[in-house]
Amino acid sequence: MGEGWQLMTIRGIPLRIHPSWFVILALATLGFQERYGQELAGSASAGSLWVLAFLTALLLFVSVLLHELGHSFVAMAQGVKVRSITLFLLGGVASVERESTTPWGALVVAVAGPVVSLLLAAGLIASTHLLAHVSPLLGAMAAELGVLNLVLGLFNLLPGLPLDGGLIVKALVWQATGSQRKGVKVAVGCGRFLSLLAVGFGTVLVLRGGGIGGLWLILLGWFGLGAARNQLQVLALQKALRDLKVRDAAKRRFRVLESSTSLRELSRVRMADDDGNGDWLLVCDRGRWQGVIDDEPLKALPVQRWDGERLGDHLKPLSSLSSIREDAPLWEAALQLDEPDLRRLLVLSAAGLPSGTLERSDLSEAVLSRMGLKLPKALVEAAQRQGGYPLGLALGQVARSMLASGETVAEPTTGPQVPASPQR
Image (cartoon, rainbow, N blue to C red; front, side):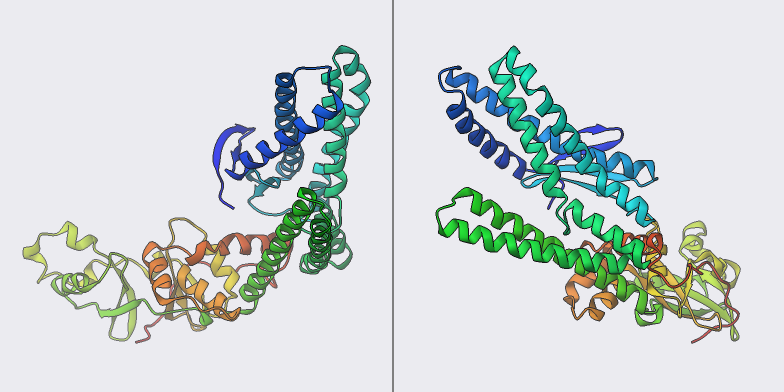
């Protein structure tokens, strides 16, 4: 689902409207108009009923927004950044940077939305009689919105992902077992069961003439099955990041030059590069690592001096390159590569010697291969040129979630290290 158009910000949270939202707004308005036409026949004009129906549809989505804000504000109180809230065909969804770090925190965030909906339902239903004395139209709208918020709150408490009830189940299992992964598996299983039940029941309703109600159940079930599949894919990504080592994904995008090499030769090497993000050039002197060379000397010195200048006079230390040991788990590399200005890591052997390099495209290729998926070569090369992940894989976000929830074996041990001697 795309992010849609940004409408406003609420306490720093962008509110977005997905194009599909206009479809459900129109359908909801039509449905409310038909319902009010039966309930309020003769007490209001046709135009007034259409206005009332449209306002009810809008206020219903305001209720959905308040539901998502309930989740968001509680998450923000725990230090979790909320990226956006998007209203779409099936309601609303809040996108967060990461999950809560504790099962109790996750439970509170999950419960907050339904609590908001149930409080709205109680307030609207309680005010129905008073508003009906002011205007029958207002009374009818309050009653309608009260019942809908009650349904929204109770429906979201059903125990299966992606509903809030599924998040509650996940948090409870996480608390009981100490494993967020087990909580997700149980909640996904419940969600798949409920989704299949919705698809089956909706199909029966359609075959028996249930019309839009049956189709709506099928749509909800289909969406639930898709969400369950996405959760299982995230679990598979987490397992691959935890099980694989950096050496399993590393490539070798560096070359080794002698420190006695002239800047003229450096210029020829650079001109032979196919792109501006070519191999690193590491420099050694008679069997010992000296540093790394970039294009700065070529830019700073006139061409006439290139033959007389040597690489050894213009080196940067190898420690200036971000590095990681080859025996580190792959999730640690994903955390490092999540830095926006970092495109590549230097991979070091157990002895502290450069043994390869690692980029986002390499990391993605290894993880997906572990999951039984092979990416087209052109897709990998395009991601490599752009310095990003193919298919938009947010492996850094997955790794942060693993670290926050304790689904990693050890704390990161990465950082710049200075190798002692070269490996050709």
